[in-house]
Image (cartoon, rainbow, N blue to C red; front, side, top):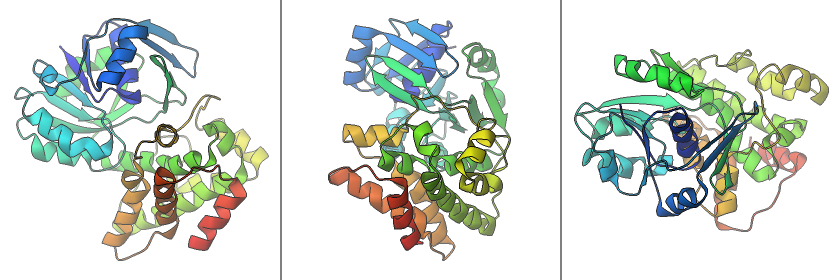
Amino acid sequence: MRIAVYGAGGIGCYVGGRLAATGTPVTLIGRRRMGDELAEHGLHLTDYLGAELSVRDVPFETEPAAVADADLVLVTVKSAGTPTAADELAGALKPGAVVVSFQNGIRNGDILRERLPDQVVLSGMVPFNVLNRGGGAFHQGTSGGLDVQRHAALTPYVEGFATAGLPLTQHADILPVQWAKLLLNLNNPINALADVPLRDELSQRAFRRCLAAAQAETLALLTIEGIKPAQLMVIPPHRFPMLLRLPDFIYKRLASKTLAIDPLARTSMWEDLVAGRRTEIDYINGEVVRLAESLGREAPVNAKLVELIRAAEVGPRRAWSGPELLEELTRAG
């Protein structure tokens, strides 16, 4: 059965590349720039466990029509591009095709489902980080497989994903899983503003206290909304802020059992700022601000992170120290 990856950036090339490397027919669909890069260098995939996979000649297309014969389409475009992607897919997909949103944020699956009534649309979540190292090289820097909404239509693909080292964990209710991932992604703007690798940032208590403040604010709002984030790691989500606030030597000991992070890991938001692209801040911390507004509340810490990233998108970038950023968020909160 044929798989297409719609939006071949970091996540799309990595997931599609791992599937292709283990024999699954995959077509990547993305921008011409990426197609030219892969034509020259092929795909070279590595991960935090030491895996190295190289694959050449993965079909790459730039037009939506390339999904016409796909049985499964993995949507990995940036969240701001979801409405456009949905409209493009609507004009090209065959009835009954399975579409999975592997994107940041909460609402992408709903947008796709609304505009693709003749297809099976499922929400999914990628828990790990992928760094685009250039020259066709993509590196998975943190642990995790793939999470997706449970559906019988996925059955033919389960073995292929497992063989590729990306097992599909299926959930009857995906929303708590998405919010659990978003709690972790609240660190994306902090890492981008810090301008250091992920592991270096999280080794500093001041930066962790910034993340703890954003998470605690979000958890309080989710409690009011009646949403209990899923437990994806050893530590339950409501314990995250407490863990992050611990002194460095205690945090290091406990965190090593919680999430594997290698020295290369960076966030996609950092990559976007470096490349001069618009970030997904509105679909990460901005989701918390929207939730607060819907409840008649405020989310000043997350709102300040949105403000700082928007300023970084249009103005000169600076590297914030942990104490500087913590002071800024403390004043806002």
